[in-house]
Length: 111
Image 1 (cartoon, helix red, strand yellow):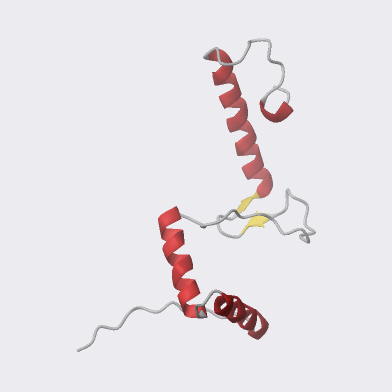
Image 2 (cartoon, rainbow, N blue to C red; image 1 turned 90 degrees about the vertical axis):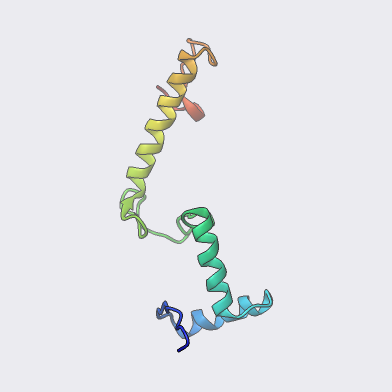
């Protein structure tokens, strides 16, 4: 008896599918192959194989935006990044890699 491969199924709109198929065709692939490449790259990267950014036409204020993958607000992620940058800045001063008189934190952020 032949072994059947598992399937992943999802729905997208007709227009999106047509546009995706056109992109795949320009790359010499079909849509199924492109999805397989994405899956392999995501596995290799341990997440998205590209940078995720909010779209320019996103009208929600940053504090209200939610990243659909993790369900975490952009404001919360920004706060985490800011605290990490400040801690790294303090470590650089402590290790002597920056002068103690450095009044500015990373990227001009006041400490």
